[in-house]
Image 1 (cartoon, rainbow, N blue to C red):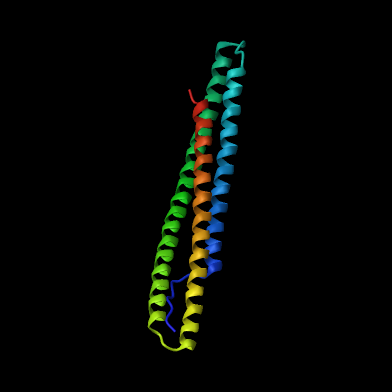
Image 2 (image 1 turned 180 degrees about the vertical axis):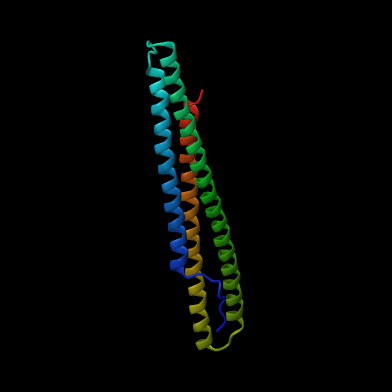
Length: 170
């Protein structure tokens, strides 16, 4: 029996897709918290009356601007990390598509072979092979679509959080 040693199990594929979804979700949650912090800092700065002394108000304004800069820096770090996870997910989508294409080719080869077989018993067993490949193709398509939808939704939320942060920047 010939099998490739680098061929993943279905549970490994599902695990990888779920891991990517979880990492992207966590990244979005981090961006949301940081964007909320940024909005709070900016709102605080906008709400201050600055009625104290020149020195005191200058120091307060400087501290708040530093807090804003630190928040922006942290957002950019988390955003870059999320970009990396999204790129890895997109790359995995490509790997899944390659597996789908290969499986479809295998299915065609089995179909062609079944057309040349004379004995019913052999044909019946090849049908089982075709069914197994079809099941694999369906599974891979579902996992590929799950990864793609999760990544695209994640990218949309990421853009929204970027907009929130940039809306507060002066």
